[in-house]
Length: 316
Image 1: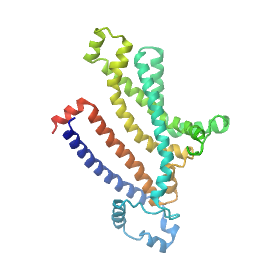
Image 2: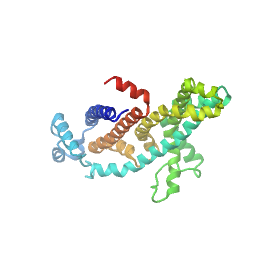
Image 3: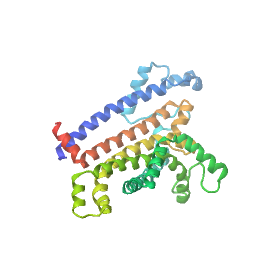
């Protein structure tokens, strides 16, 4: 894609993302504000009026948008802490868990996808297919509770069943605390990446340049490694980019099950305590991260894939 086309595509994508973000912000505000419970009963009438809770919902919404435009997420209604500070502190475990899971799950998924394609028709390929379907079908909360019970009650000395240790305090302890939640969070990612690469490689193996490579005398292993895999990995990489955003949102369940002090658990606790500014800020963080990553993946895919460049150039 030429530089001019890339900039046009980027501008269009940013405008679309801005509209989507506005819709997300509106929905989050409405859903959080209309949750059951009466926050005025918690703070009392005077504090409620100071917080603007006595104003109509439309006035609260306009004030919320004005503060958000200034980058002000407000303060916690429970302890007065700045919401931005809370999110920054809690974002480290969330991002670390999501990125660690993405790296490990992507490596395993690509390896399984390549192996299943190279061993097509064998018992190993059938086993991987069954495992990937199972991995995409198992609910993450059920698997998390199962691992929590196994390693918390029956195998307590092998892996920590919950909690969190910062990397700066104990790198090894931090890694050990990541294994179980990453396994729960990354199971579906491994399955999806493996299936995506497998389907993409099978499609690539039908291309003319692969047939030419085989006719030129290349061994099947060389065809898979040097012709099929490099071209098939682009769609898989796009899926990986989108899955990182899904992993961020999936940490809500995993952090709650394994008591990890991340943004997801912060959102759950703030909703339970009717702390609307914190709940809104945490939800916006997860939504914005997913949207930004989705936009970056679309732009990267448009830059890497020549077929998309051709389609976009014809649609000007």
